[in-house]
Image (cartoon, rainbow over all chains, first blue to last red; front, side, top):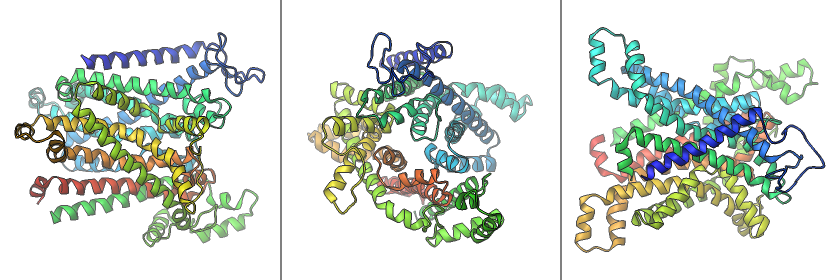
Length: 272
Length: 315
C-alpha cells in the first residue's frame, strides 16, 4: 500500500518536471536570456511568480529552462554509462572464466573514483565544461551497470529456455540478445531510474562548483552558486533552485523504488 | 585468516597502483603544453624547451610515470607549477583541516545515523518511525551544498550564532571548532539519512529472529536486548554502509570546503584547477581515491572482526 504511494508521488513529480522542461523548449513566461537592470531583485508578484534575479531575469523562466539541462544531462550520462556498463556486464556473464574476472576487477576499480574526482581530473586536463561533467557522471554509471547486468544475467543463463536455445545451436551472442537482455531489462530500467536521481544530484553539485554547465546556460546548480554571493541581499534566490533539485531527485528516487517493488514484490515485503 | 589478509592487502596495493596509472594517463595525455602554462604565452621557445627538459616532459610517458610514482613512494609529489613549492608541503599544510572535518563528519554521521535508525526500528510502524523515515527520504535527496547554504542562511545570516564561513586557524581552537560546526552538520545530516535507513532495516530483520524472542521471553529489558542481541547482529550491513560513507564524507569535504571557504585540500584542488596546476591536481586526485579505497579495505577487514563465522569460511 505505502509502496504504491511511493510510485505515485515519484511518477507525479517526474511528470510535472518533464512537462515543465518540454514546455520551456517552446514557451517560458519571459525570455530568460533578456537582462533588465530596472527589473532586478523583484519580489514575487502576479507578473513574476517567483520574482526576478540579480540580472532582472524571471526566476520561473530560469528554473524551467534549467530543468531541461538537468534532465538532459541525466538522460545522456546514464544512457551512455548504462549502455557501456550493461554491454560489459552481459559480456562478462556470457563468457565467464577469465573474461568475467578481468571485467569485474576493472569495474571494481571504477568504484574508487567518485564522479566528483573524475570531473576534477577532466576539468584540470581539458578545462571545465558540461561535456566533461556528463562524461564524469557517465563514467561512474559504467561499473554500477556492469555489476547489476552481470548479476541479473548470471541468473538468466541457468533458465531452461536458455538451455533449450543453446541445445538448438544458438550462439552466446544471439542468446544474450534474444533471451538474456529482454529478461534483465526490468532490472536495468529500475536501476536507471535510481541512477537518474543520482545523476541530477551530481550535475547540480558539479555545476555549483563550476565544473558543469557554464554561463549563460541555465542550471539549478549554477543558479545556487550565483545566489550564494547574494545571500544577504536576496536569500530567496538560494531557495527555489534547491527545491527544484530536491523535487527532481525525490521524484526519480521514489519512482525507481516503486518500480523495483512492482518488478520484485518479494523485496517489498522483506523491507516493509 | 592470514591468507585472507595477505590476499586483501595485495589487492588493495594493486588497486592503488592501478588508480595512479589511470590518473596519470588522464592528466598527461593533454593537448596543452605545461611549459607554456608555467612560463606564460610570451616566453621564448628556448626557455620552454629548457623547462620541459628540466621537468622531464620530453621523456616517453611510461618513463615519466615511473619517475613520478617512484617519487610519490618516497613522499615526493613533485613541485607545484603555480605555488613553486613542493606539492607535499601544500598538502601537509591543509591536510589537518580536511582530516578534522572528515573525522567530525564521519563521527557525527555514525552517531546520528545509528541512533535515528535504532529509534525508528524500535518504534516500527508508529509515528516516530514514519517521521524519521520521511526525514531520511528528504535527506537523501538534498544536495549537501544546498543544505549548507540553508544552514548559513539560518544560523549565520538570520540568527548570527555562527560564522558563515572561513577558518581562523588552529591557534584559536574555540573559534576554529565553531567554524567547523556548520560544515560538519551539513556533511552529517545528508550522510546519516542513508545510514539511518540501513540501520533500521537491518535491526528490523534481526528483531524477527528466534533468539530475540527468546531473550524477550526471559524477561530481559528492551535496552539490554537491543544492546546485547540486536545491534551486534545487525552490524554487518551497517559497517558496509559506513565504509561507503567514509568515502562519501571525504569527497564531500571537497564540496563543503568550497561552500564554507575552508582552506583545506578541497579548496586547494579547485585553486589548482583554475591555475592549471597539474601536479597538484594529480597528487590530490590520487590521494582522495586512495582514501576511498583504504576505507573499503578497512571495511573488508572489519567484517572478519565483527562476524567470527567468516573467519572459518575464509581459512
